[in-house]
Length: 432
Ligand code: NAD
Ligand code: UGA
Image (tube, rainbow, N blue to C red):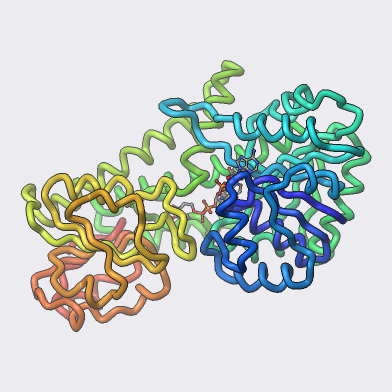
């Protein structure tokens, strides 16, 4: 099939490339010309394991094209996927749909023959109805919802082997077309689930909010573990062995971040507010997650003392999770400036390179080697669980023998650290 992906970011680029890889011809469009130029010169615009090679192969095979000429891409395609951002509005819970509506206006201007318009972006209930209103000649278009469930860092695997493919449409005929498109994945075991358009829109928000709730729940239990001398890992394992609960997304950590859980939990509350439905559980989750970030900072003061002026604090990893370069809503965006503004010297190592978010901070320095960044540390904060942080020999790397380690991802344990006389703090585990 001929497909057009509008928006070539984390979702549009990955899903466009993966659709090309299963035999479709895909036109990826972005209004940002730098993105298109970079992709056309063989470079990837995001860090996602395996993606660069896959782009190269499909580009060479002429199944994958990058362009900023939207009219040409639209006219060559049968199915148009809208993959633009749906961020929270500034200082508000509600979702900024301006990018979605701009795309709908472009489609109504340029498109020639009958097409299926698919929202892959995460959009509030009723957005498909609004898109339909924007598309002047409704007969030419069928607007459906096909929410995306991929995770950054695991995006290619998640695309190829999804648990389910959700198609929401008010027209039966589009279920058949979409099934044909997804057949290679359905044949490998993906569940194909159809519902109406609004149903699919809500399934996406409800799924993200539920996962955020699960994480927040285990994070609060971790707080209780710290007070009661219990190991959170045991609790997660013990709970997760019940198949009704499930073991995944029960890893206690710093607070959920990333481009989706924070904005989508807020978005769901705003959908509820609009319909006068009190989504009190989701509201508490948002509050608890915010509170958790402050709790981490208090913990840093417990470890280093109230006065942290000139203390050398090292961050290992600053992205919100490993295997991505994405900084959106990473906890480090709050922790680094807070500690910096109280006089600490911040040093960080990050596998995906220096981050523009920290360049304005005077005493915040990026290092490209782990052993160099760690050598004079007073405190090392293990922020992101990249594989390369999993078996470090801290006692060899750090010259200051009084340094402390705050492991926000529980990659190490107290007994191995105490053997090397390292003062070790982690999440939801007894403090010795
Ligand atoms: P992103 O910001 O990485 O990419 C969006 C792209 O759209 C940008 O490159 C931007 O330049 C482009 N764009 C904006 N307006 C445009 C227009 N009029 N024409 C052409 N291009 C335009 O966003 P993302 O992370 O890929 O997320 C996109 C959507 O998918 C969001 O709704 C998000 O919630 C959802 N989603 C994201 C993920 C994820 O892992 N990031 C996973 C599932 C769902
Ligand atoms: C999440 C969902 O998992 C995807 O299904 C969804 O498509 C996507 O949001 C989206 O809508 O954009 P993503 O944000 O890429 O994917 O990453 P996750 O692996 O879900 O992690 C999100 C946050 O939760 C991270 O900060 C991570 O560290 C944290 N987390 C995750 C935990 O603290 N504990 C866990 O057990 C799992």
